[in-house]
Length: 411
Ligand SMILES: [Zn+2]
Image 1 (cartoon, rainbow, N blue to C red):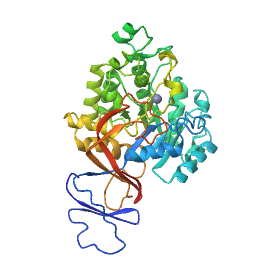
Image 2 (tube, rainbow, N blue to C red; image 1 turned 90 degrees about the vertical axis):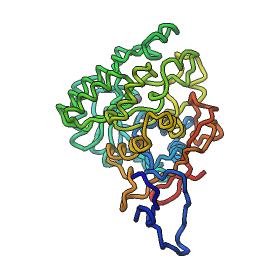
Image 3 (cartoon, rainbow, N blue to C red; image 1 turned 45 degrees about the horizontal axis):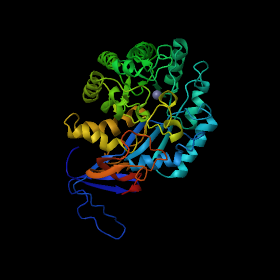
Image 4 (cartoon, helix red, strand yellow; image 1 turned 180 degrees about the vertical axis):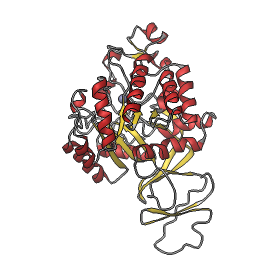
């Protein structure tokens, strides 16, 4: 819906929504939040973030990650298993769930590893991991390269109704790669990561997804070839899905010209024709949703020579203003933006929230599209500030975030 309305919340749920839905309500127990002129949206749900706990808490832990999520308007975050140790056992999933509950903020949904140690050889105990709270499986950071293991993993994921999120990268084609393979990598003398490394895995996986009927999801799609393959698969009715990050929608490999390690990401920033294909695919639904791939790193991993720098940038807090730039430029409608950040990812993960329908859980955010603020170490709730947008003034901010009717962030 796109209208001026009241939202009535009772006992953690949306009781009524509509013009004058709150008319006549009064009493001491009622709290009124006047958010005239702002957008009340279903809380955002991120299908792809890295919270670094256990193992690298100096970059981010579950509590700081969830604070960053709340400050970005997110009410649910799926966290990838490439922690240390890797989340491939019930004990680690349970520990993450407990940390998430203790933080009493946005909901935490772990992805467990698909293979033991994400080594791509032996499947994890998916039933056990699901019972402990994992909503899907992924070896993110690495691609599951062996097609026979991949087929078995998809069959297991289907049996236990878990989403399989694949980091699509043929590692043989990207050995030593530092950035997108193109004229900029040639000019800088850096080893290139060709689009083909993404495309061949997406092509193979779509065939295996069709074979197994699994809920297959392409993480952080970045190439025009992958978009083409997804469009073809979806046109035949395959139940596959994909996400795109804000940075792949906004930046090209030109951002690397100054060797800015903040722009080193995996998959890499590509070319204008890729951006055009990604934006078009997001508009028409070929790409289902936006995920941040929030990847916090400390100066230790980023203030160093380019080849030694770790890939990734933070994404939870910059997402709203960066994506609103696309709306302001007329490249994305506000309704599609909200759908791609909330309704779609919630549905793909089979998670709570993603809607403001009466009776649903009261997970929502209030966005002020005009609020000006500066992305800075001081303004970020995340423990890390590795983003090329650091110290930039931006427009648009989540000013209130609510989970199950409880305010978890306000500014
Ligand atoms: Zn990845």
